[in-house]
Image (cartoon, rainbow, N blue to C red; front, side, top):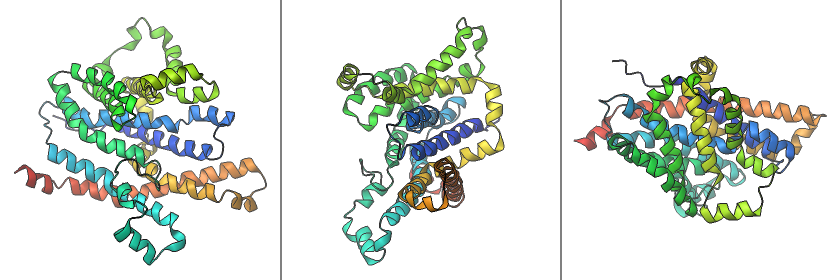
Amino acid sequence: MNKKIRLEYLDSVRGIAALMVVFYHFIGWQRDGDIAYNLASMIFNGSDAVSFFFVLSGFVLSYQYFRFADRTLHLPQYVYKRILRLYPAFIFTVLINYLYWHRNKLGWLVIEDIFFYNEHLLWEELLMVGRKHQYYIPGWTLSVEMVLSLWMPLFILLAKKNIKYIFLLLPIGILLGFWKSVFTYFVHFGLGTLLAYYYPQIRYYDFSKHRLYKFRYVAAFLVFLLFSIRHLDRLFDFGKQYDDIAEMLGIDFFFFTAFASFLILIWIINQPKTQDFLHHQWLVFLGKISYGIYLMHWLIVVYIMENWKHWDIYFTNSTVKFLTLLFITLIATILSGTFVYYFIEKPFIRFAKTRFWWQFWLK
């Protein structure tokens, strides 16, 4: 049996989504509320690429256990691999962000703070504890990723027992949204689990024979609007009545973008021509370094924006300045993401595959 389980075209999608985050943070740094920014954000929707990452993670983490009947889930092995997959590169990122913000007082004071006083709660941020994300601001998403990753074994076992249990998790996740907790994202990982479970049916279903196929372009446009609902609200304020109802019910825009991400992934999984495009080697490479891109882009954007006026001496045209600095940001992010992948992520991925520690615990 062919045990190759990696779907490289989904790696490419993750890479594209990571670049969307870079664009989003760059163009929105000084233009939040600007109409042009809100329109651009509907295309480079980095804020809701987070939803896409979570749904995709639910799929990736559960896919192998549904595709291969003989694939068993060993909890110690699973947890061990997830920790080594997420934490080392994250810790590196938080540390370099911490050192950047304390660059003017590097020395013994910083060492004291790190190892003795912890006045700036660095250790809480390094361990993804609660909402301590003052140095690497997008780190909250990785806290969600880590917590929900540890819930995924339960999702997988429930789905194997009866897939209806996963359908029940979706409204539970929406109800939990009232408390704005990490468990709000049950919806995302639950939808990803459903994608993995029904992957063969989605992959080979002939949508061209469905009676609604003739409306496919209308459907695609509606999904785009659903995925961009946050920015539609910024362009056309939904009003206080909507806000009051959403607050009362605990309905977050992330619920809408989760379902939009779910539908987008259904389309990608079902479309061989799209997959052929996504199999381009450069897109696959971006997918491989996507975690590094996501981690490293923040500091680069912060540095560029903090020195925004300084760059004026090199440019006489604001548009040229904007495009040039955007290009520099993208190149620097890709290069640093490549470094993180090859020198931090990949060594720890290999180390996790030695299976020494989890075999010890399984004995």
